Image (tube, rainbow, N blue to C red; front, top):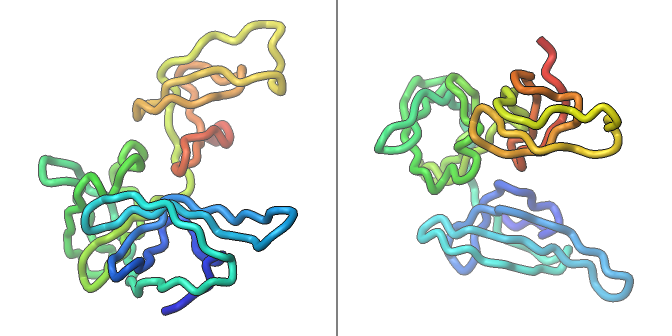
Length: 188
């Protein structure tokens, strides 16, 4: 199915030169002069090669037909990450290279969307937010205000992020799963 390049988003599956690839990042660039372009990084599914592509925003790109199914994360072992289909209760194991950096945000019983192309898992989409506990951070300095600066913190999944000064060790916070950035303090 052909779609215009500017409509593609992170996680979409595209066909480039007859090979499938998942979009890692995408950015629409509108220069002052000249034609607007869409810049994207695509990781080929077959061999993991990362490509940097640029299209005119109105150019047609082949988007692969994929089926999205809700799955629940169960556990991780030597074979990979195991998920259960929420409708059929079938289990599927995904290798670590499909999950990538998002593995740190997987929590037991988390609902995710797995994209299948011709019955083969090719991509995963996590919920946009995850609640995690701060396990290590510096104490707040009295003169510091909430708007002035952020301080480094380590979360319960091992990811480092920046948090406001009022966040202390043991506080549960909500972060974006895309980049680990702080959103808000978790509501109990």
